[in-house]
Image 1: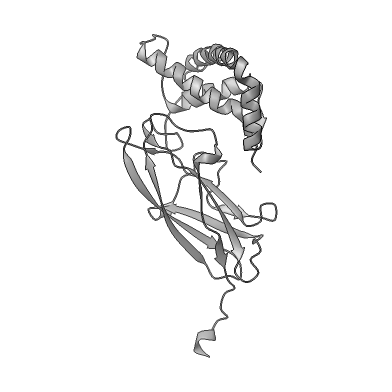
Image 2 (image 1 turned 60 degrees about the vertical axis):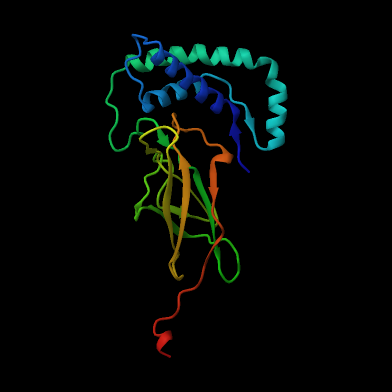
Length: 235
């Protein structure tokens, strides 16, 4: 079951709209328009507004019904706090970019990748192991350090692994591209497993930083089998 804060998408959209409007109008106080500054402002706003959590489609429908009349006020409040956050963030000079920073837009926003590793004999989720995600033959860089690659399966997350790859810089908005990936699974006492797949994407003018279930790529269940004893092939 996934818990989702409805305010994340509203704040994300409002803050990006504020930056775009300031850039379009040539605001003299807009000293930076990078992805990191936008994310800093999104966090500034989210820390100052009340969350609205849902856990299902029915929860979303209920929330949408309940807040219809106050959406205008919500947007106004988010915009007011967003402008305050922009001025505070942009007044603080600090280095940007680097290998850990997000690229400038437009970008290919790759979806979260979700899968399961099951015992090939019992069909039970494995409770220990390592899952590595590769793109073009090298470990894929996560969107931020909280999305580990490789992912360590544990008894707390039996069988399940998740990845969220860092957005990829595009030449222009609306560009289409197919990204090849490989999953490598390593479990003690089992034969190693590799699974290849591709994800198609169209470049977008903004970077997605709020998790949404509809922007996920679900892999088929992966089955891993006991390793063959040494010398068994010669018997």
